[in-house]
Image (cartoon, rainbow, N blue to C red):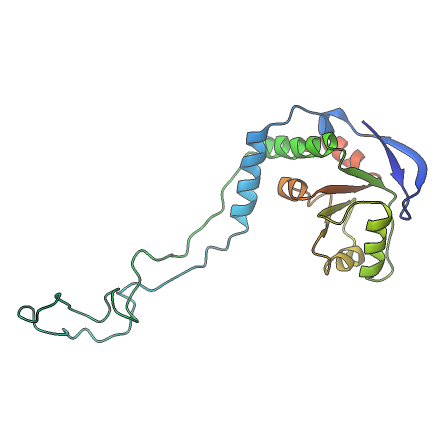
Length: 209
């Protein structure tokens, strides 16, 4: 697949790049994509949710009334879950949500996600640029100039750029990642993928291992 490299003002630079078929034109594997997305989302969870059961409530253990003859249910403690301030039954406990996925499956998932973007013509090649200071308005202007759309846009850089990242932080529809940070969820969650020229060579060289 051949794409034109654009300048930041949206005009063609005159350079064309070829996207490698072993990364951008494979047979997509939907199940691998599913597994990788599920793993990514699970690994974002902290698992800190916690409620107190009746053994952890600070209440008196005095019996509320006599066992028989009261005309109602038998209650032994205010810690019971039916009382306001009582313990919760089967409430959440801290747990570890992380799970492991084989490297080859993750690589297949990323290549499948990139292939889907290529099939949808949702990849834009852009000349690398730098920013001397964080400028949200400038990044927004670049995004509009290259016609990346007003929906979710993912910029993929050859390496981290603090100023470009900070420029995107106030833009909910724009995400910036380096090629080392790219993942299946970020790719699939974006409507448009903007690759800095050179990123495609890094992906091809690594073959998304």
